[in-house]
Length: 582
Image (cartoon, rainbow, N blue to C red; front, side, top):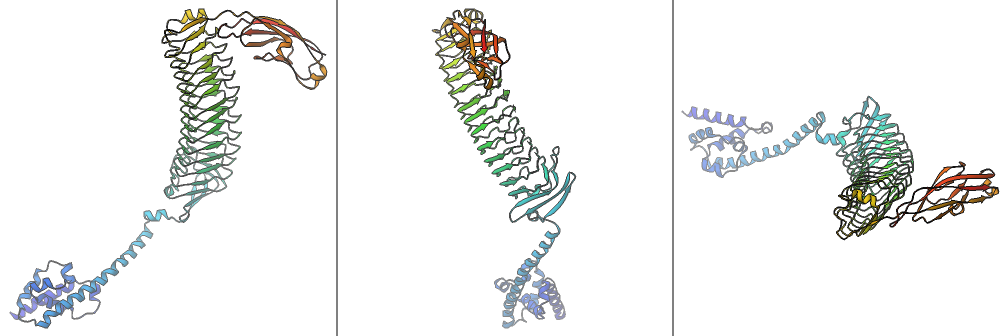
């Protein structure tokens, strides 16, 4: 029986030793089994108060150890009973030290694995790489200390027809500076799109095209200089670069395409180079901090809504080579105060200046033939509009709800006024419709609550009285225009040959013509005569060009009076005057 108890105790000790950590076994302690056996033979009450051993912590299920404890109740002495606690403390302390070392060794193993399989951290700190693209050889490197991305090589970056992500796109969240080295000829589509932390970009001379979406959504980019080699900035190239304040465009640039700078809300100043010919649709839309727009003399094409909703824009200068001010070009530019339209502009497009609340006056040159629908609608502070002879038509709603408009003179030659063109102009008190007008459309002055008088020919009123004048005040009066008699006589003017031989000479209209009884501004037109002698349409000044030979020249012209608020325009009168060069 005693032999069985010893055998059971031996098995229990063997099991306890087997669960010990290998480093503990390697320590060479030979008496641990005996001490462990002593712990096993202690009473359960003492085991609860004793310091827990590693065995009890790591292997809580040890009910088998209680059997040998019952068989050796009489064997342990007081000394032996006290030994288990010391042994337990020793065993507890030793594994603890080993556990402190284990994580360090584990960490070394994980670092080795990271070297074999790159983690997200490794991607943020890449080594320099060399890649080759089909369009040419490119080398790109990233400095993780300065967060600078450098692109070098020859040829284009990407291609103009590809929207595929570039191989350096994994740096889009960390790159702060982009340097493109000399040798690159084109920045392709989406080359650096969504690089949201980039603050500066260096573009070298030699780049000819900046592709679609090339720097789209680079929301931290502050300034950029476009070198003179760049011919075209393509669609949405710098769209929504919301921190961009300065763009330097240099001579050589010819086109800025669709939405190129759309949404650059902090862009304050853009100096357009003399070579610029085309500005695309939405090119500078929503650039709410842009202050001035001075288009170069060669800019012949501006597309729809190019400067729409530039709410900080205060002044605009439009060159004569621009045939048409496009639809919605300056719509919603609520701070716009000054607009200069040069001679040569022919059309003012749909809603071109709609909702320009700060505009107080505007002069339309004689080259403008058409003002299209809604062109100046809801310009709340527009008081004075100067229209020139030559204007052919005013579109629907063109000046609707211009509540401050008090002074507008419709010019001789105007043929058509569209529906509600002046409706809601509550400050308008009187207006004269020239007798050249053929068509008047409905509700022309609807809601003009202070309109007191309309001057119009009786024939035109009778033709359009049913709906055209509906909505006007009940106390408004209609004044029919009177006939405008005009007589014209020709004279003879002398010009000294010595003077005209060296310099072109000007002769006042009063020296060659006598005008009587006509009322209102006069118009002049040459019918025939020497090609070197001309007459000004508006003031009748005769010009004798340099090196005109000696002789007497007969010049046939026609003259008419445009009338006023009382008289309608006269008919054309033909007359001949003479110029003697001697």
